Length: 560
Image (cartoon, rainbow, N blue to C red; front, side):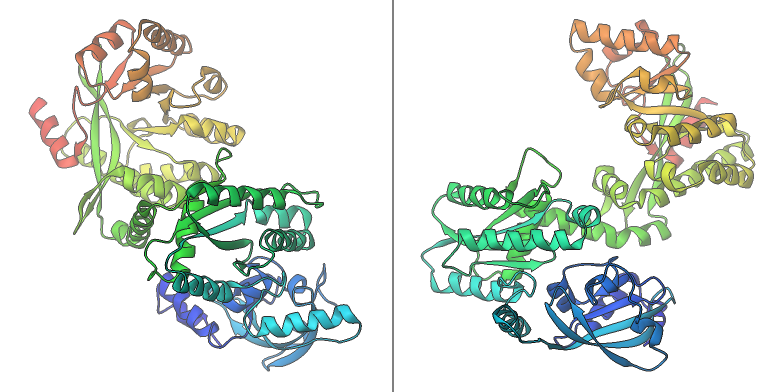
């Protein structure tokens, strides 16, 4: 089978859907293994149900119950023919009959398709017989093989029956997972991870001794449903389950996050109810102050919006839907324009202008901000080149740099290539970095910024005062300018003490030979205060709003 041919014809989402449809036919667990490294590249739904979502694990850990590659590894024995081998699996507590076939994966690497054909349980003492019965039930699709509690399909059936045959009761579906479970597996090993999963299953059994209203859905995700009259009953049940989970002999801190979906429309499929409970849990991940959250319909709308943006972002970049806007900067000494900041706007062909807050934070999370930034850098260079060719004296443009570029790209090379391509000097661009970037890998950041500065680029710290404000952070890293955050400006100058704070901040920056820019300047009071405080440059609606390049050029032309 050659999956590499599929990728050439379909986009990534279509490819995934097609592969899922191919490898989820029937009810057999199927893996795709990298033949060279033994890493698990893909698990179908049945394999995830039996073994957990173990992408990036090694096949010998799952299939063969070994800590290292097997001496008699079937991967080494297989040629272009299919072979069948028996291997013992810890997850199955049984001997599996496995079929191995060589395939080509999407990136053209050689891989092996491994399929569980059958399970042969060795009967002996009483414990083995119990394992055998559990495995036979699991094969019928009712119970989770590792923990012995109901699985996803049985949970859906049980929940649907309860809701259908008890129309007078109110129900809630609660899902939860283990915070940073992958790190637990990485630090302590999969055997400890399996112990934790079994412990959680026992905690659910203990709290619901006479019901089958709970399940392991997949990987480290569990669920239970319950009837209630008041929301407080749900919270109390969650607290008791959490206490039972924490009361463990395993020397690992087990932290869990719960999502709650209140069943209002009984015609909604159970799987969607579970998804909505998981959406609620996702909203409080990494929030140490909260352990549970109720689903709100707004979550669904937000996720649909995010999905639409991610589905369209590459097309939008290819079709030049992202437009460069410029917001002028003005010298407070003589009110002359001395630069402009490059901002991006998404002009959607059907939805019109999409606000930056609807896509920039998402792009910063999923990494697409790198491509958008580089696109904007080139648009800035094209614009400056256009001014020079038209005989207009160019002004420096400020462009944003994301943390991804510091971590993954050779920034000096990228900018040098752009300057060479458009025949510009480095003083034409000011590079803006956010203050929060100083908190992540400051040594690496310092190396990159020092290299850029040595090559003549001006460096500006954006959003200064937004959250990590400290001049000591920039004392040891060479920058040229700090930009005072709008909120910092608004909050501080609202009081006499605040005005002193801002004035002294500007004064200290000047003592460090730093230029000071204030953004979000909207009133005459702002301007007067900043002038008296010896601030150098102002940017904001008081002077000019962000505008398309064409409008900016018209404004400049009128002043020439």
